[in-house]
Length: 256
Image (cartoon, rainbow, N blue to C red; front, side, top):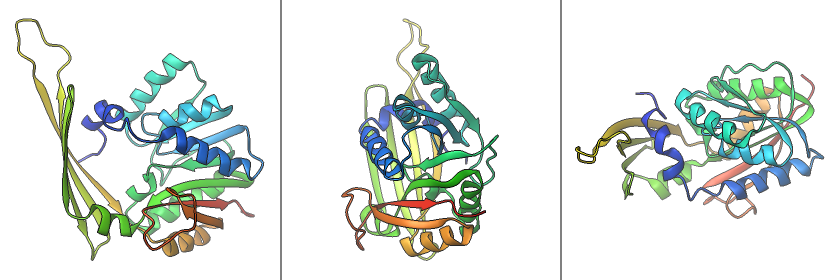
């Protein structure tokens, strides 16, 4: 079952507490430490374009790549309102193509965890290295195996709102290292006549993510041709610990 189809319509509403402003500040701080304050920047797994828009307001020329056409439709609606000059591409992170190189690549909100096979992640990293300017920077995050196995585990989360609600059933396969969450989403139908009662449309999606360790990420970065620079806890911005749930990594283009 394809992910981010029915969910796309209510994604922003259900993710309204996501700290995009802080994530934007964290990304900019990382890039500025390498002297990158403007220029062309690529966001992988841009979704509905919330972070893409924020980075554009900070002076970057933005390209957003995502495999969900439904999510990109919402991103394009935001672009029409903001009038930002953003290029959106409906492409897979494992096979994306650009017209030229970029100063930096950013990927947050555990987008890379959706790449379930190590070879897929390595293929993405190789493309990043290929499309980065010389000494360009790759800033990304990933959810750790610890988060999936211990923090989320096998659990059920439900939330009810005025215009939508969802049930999230989470399962972690410790042997395979794969996290599965089954989403059931109810969205209030917009076009209802006065004579009709309110109706909710029901969508179901299944999402899979792999829990990676920092050691494996480092190995795949180096195997792809990138240079690993540093990693730190994405929540505390301090050192990575065995209980870090989300980790930031910085890698750099080296001689292709």
